[in-house]
Image (cartoon, rainbow, N blue to C red; front, side, top):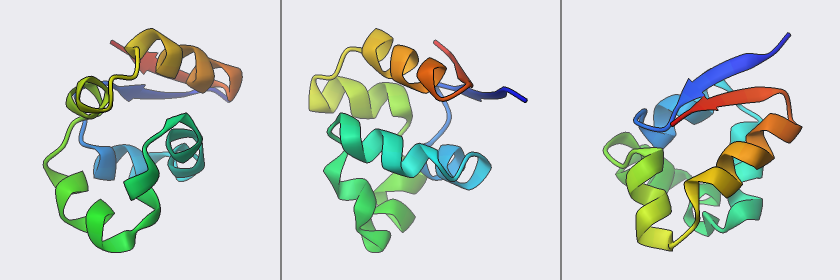
Length: 75
């Protein structure tokens, strides 16, 4: 069954909704997500869209990678 997430959700909400998203995002360059302190602080206020802009990662690349894992990313 496919899961759905939204680019305007916080990183923390995405990871709590879809736990496998943590590893996917880490592999895309969100290295700080592996640090529980960062996930529980900045992750609670940083949306995926804002994080992608900050890390200079194309949101469509993120969408494609989630799609490869049966996760729909609404952008």
